[in-house]
Image (cartoon, rainbow, N blue to C red; front, side):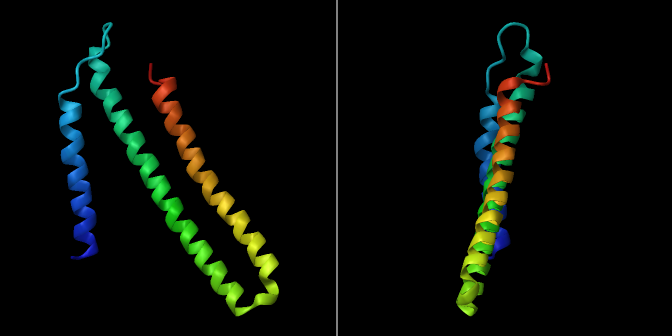
Length: 114
């Protein structure tokens, strides 16, 4: 099966599984019924955002480690410098995922839209 069809199937499956949950959700209590759907879309966006950030970070880390291991295998004399630069790069990649998590937590719990 082609990779594009697998990705499209995953998105369709996710949409089919999440759409009814938002459609049948009860309204908010205390006069905020008009924002109930809005908050569910914020939650859905947060889940998708963290998932994409984690997937992108994982792919980036895999590529960085692969390149560093290949470089170390070709020139073992520079093992220390390559390893140090790889760790710094991995820390920077992971920090981007953590920044995404912080933004998602702010959107979920601080409610800046009120």
